[in-house]
Length: 247
Image (cartoon, rainbow, N blue to C red; front, side, top):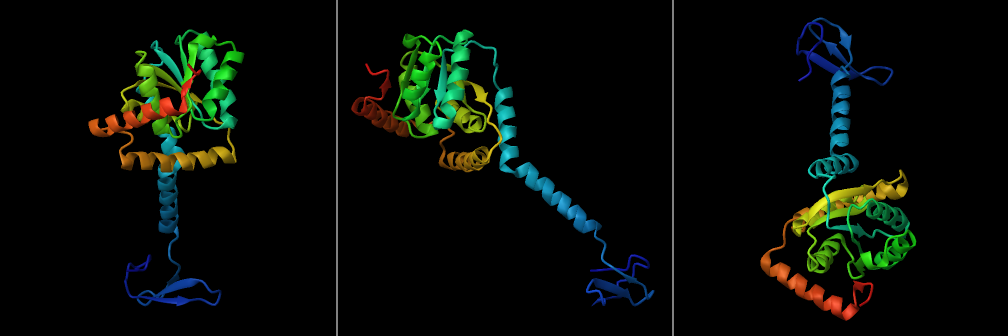
């Protein structure tokens, strides 16, 4: 209930003054006053802070920091795994993988993505990565399938610890998904330039992360579900000739 800021009386009459502004008349001290805007201002500030803290971009960045701090980036790894995210990103992430390979971070590079992997393998060879050190798969159509096919094709060769190369916005969902499949993941984010495309990807990743969380795709697959998924994936590998280069 409104009270007078001068005498603290609650005997307050509300009316609209000639200028159309909402005012109040205290029937005890006969003073006219307007409602303080302080609380409204504080409410706006609190609302903006909550929006900022819970905004997709802030949450995504916070997860990037948390995941990066949970990894020892100086550790040697078994393979560099590169995830495809469309033709606009192929060059940057392939270059990052080639540089990591040249630095000796891992002896092998694995490209994952239905339409992107063949292109990135050719780019990596052009950038100097030895052809016999590059492999990949061209069956996956989602981040979860990236992890599934990598699990089948890479773990058969022994690698468990990987450098995961994808764009910085994608790193949280990708790293958590691969960890769910038992990989030790050291994230290597490729920085995204500020653009409408980046803003769209931030919102896309926010929805994607929530969907993966609700659907359980960030958790290790249950034994029965994992066996079924691997059986279907192996069938697809043989039927679609998913291994790259083709053998």
